[in-house]
Image (cartoon, helix red, strand yellow):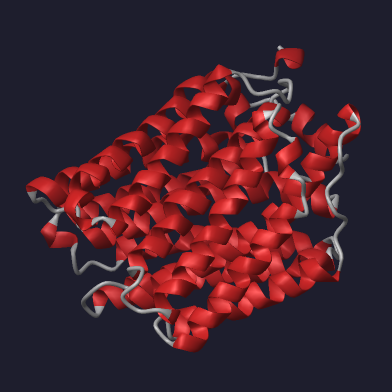
Length: 394
């Protein structure tokens, strides 16, 4: 039985027929709720602090999207059966329990020193790392061993976050490691799907094709990985800044080679290019903050990577993959364009707010509102697709 046949054979609730369904829908809802929840506490005072906000955006929301994508993509990479039905429901239950545990620990001071919420949250990503390793090794899919390594590092970064937080203060090292892993995943996976989908779309139209993958792409990924490692270890060191600037420049040139300028007629394609542009910009700004201290605050580059690269690229993948795996045409409508406009405005206002301290708070409020609106629009607009069976199987 192949991947498609296994999905067709599923007889349970449609939401557990493919990995992206529960994780995309509920991660989007969680993201839409978590951002204003933290903002309210930040402005009015409350138990939901910065540490919770950072964790839930990076490991909670982003972790859920990464898992939903990989559960859907890995079977296609390895040719093995997908995780569906009860195993998928259990894995999703772990993610959901982690979100509840983290919120409970934040709201209840008596749980602040408890270990069980941290164990519940940490178990989810380690379980996913096990699934990815099992599929990659059993399927002898050596090309994707680096992806398995990155998922494992992400799980350890999450565990490290809890250890650092428990020792007092903000988990800066673990946060950088988690963000670096996600940035590299965007460079690797985004570097596959963006030119691939662009090529497929341009072949139908007879337009200019993106450059084929060559040694330049390999060099770009190596420099990006080295730069991110240096940034994790010594974020303010001039060498780390130089490496991150080099990585940003190489990724920008890599993006130009994919001919995104010729895809403006299809939002489902150009949004991938825009998401990758945010990655390049985030790397450049992060490098600039280290190479030229005082010129760009470090938070600006970080938010270009988080609100920009992660926010835009995840919604780009979520919309396209959801339509494709639920039997819908791969064409964007008004709802997709609205989502893309909202998330890019959210990222832009967040980055600009860090550059102009005088209007930081109004732009922070605007960014949170736009962010929540983008994910709530996705959740409402895509809920019927993700909750109900494919139209051709009803």
